[in-house]
Amino acid sequence: MSNTLNIEKHPLTKQRVFKKKNIKKFYIETLGCQMNVADSELIIAMLNNEGFIKSESPQNSDLIFINTCSIRERAEEKVHSQLGRWDKIKKNKPEVIIGVLGCMAQNLKQDILENRPFVDIVLGPDSYRKLPEIIKRSINDEESIVDTKLSRYEVYEGLFPKRKGGVNAWISIMRGCDKFCTFCIVPFTRGRERSRNIDSIVKEAEDAVYNGFRELTLLGQNVNSFKYNDYKFHDLLEIISQISGVDRIRYTSPHPQDISDELLDIMQKYDNICNYIHLPLQSGSDKILKRMHRSYSKDDFLSLAKKIRQTLPGVGISTDIIVGFPGETEEDFLETISVMEDVKFDSAFNFKYSPRIGTKASEYEDQILETIKQKRLEKVINLQKEHSILRNKKLIGSTQTILVEKQSKMSPDHWAGRTDSNKWVIFSKGKVKLNEMVKVSILDSKGVSLKGELVSEVKAA
Ligand code: 5AD
Ligand code: SF4
Image (cartoon, rainbow, N blue to C red; front, side):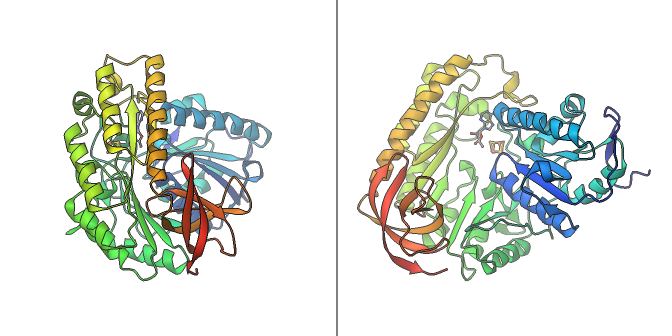
């Protein structure tokens, strides 16, 4: 068969036992970041267009996909344990086609092919367009099909995602990352930075609003490095904020280096741009930041956080922190604690450093013992809990505008929704419905969320 798709067929894999012609149903599981959620929505749209039907269970499906993440070892372990379960499905139903998609496919294709020979398709994040064609070939083919070529251009222009219902639409505006932080696998799995055409982003945003989504979240590995012709990220944000019917706009994940004054001004100017910034610190030690290749110092970060709090009163600031990066001494770790004490983040995602093969930091010789990493992680988690509670308590007595997002896990009689500063508030349902914007008076702070009481409905959906 001629290889018109420019894909690899992998010789290591075994023969498929049965061939099935009327493959219809697919299941897709998504691990990892919001970019993966958005990518899965593109994949679902593409497969629906080709007549495949999404199923909610792998057991009932002809095609089973996992959209994978490689950011830390734990994420990869999850993929392996899921593949172990799917191997059993395949033993009972050999005609099932199993596909590993996304970052881990990119990063570990050889490992997957050698150790999981029942996997039929391995596709990296820039190859999804080929999926329908590859499925057709895979039905008749006896070897695994692999495509992990990264592209300098692929932004999936012209493909529009199939979104689950809900209040928030993810809109991918750029892909890839050129920052090469020494701990991070993303530049290797997702390739070089490239931004989408601004007209196409605006059209997608307008469509999402037309389809009832009240909140839009602009997505990118380095979202604020967006650049299209003369348009920078803040220009895009301003254009999106003027689309009629957009109640809330969020974006993630930015890099502190690219938080410009213009961006803060635009955030201040438009009410529908949420008063929230994710500001990944990673470490508070200048020595470690340098080794991480993070391009800012502790003081730069502190000044930026101060400027953000001054420009945007009431802003919610969250962060990412890595403990136990190679060479991190107790003094370095205390520098991280000192930034936490100074900024008092509203929330934080805290991680133990996880060596990723192929990254520079994984080759550093002064790796930190697991027991030390664990102790430091516990310290930052506990400190952050205190700070989150402290920040949340400041809202008690205030009235907040909440977008009703889902039923509270605590009780079927309560809704959960967020303030524009990204804090979860739980309140009795009253007569309001999902997707409405309501005023809620904040009564109490319960752990990391808030408890409130409906004041009145602001604007019906
Ligand atoms: N180990 C631990 N955490 C990591 N992150 C990225 N790579 C690693 C790694 N190798 C964290 C960073 C980043 C977030 C998305 O994941 O904090 O901001
Ligand atoms: Fe990874 Fe750094 Fe790029 Fe973020 S900026 S995706 S941490 S390399």
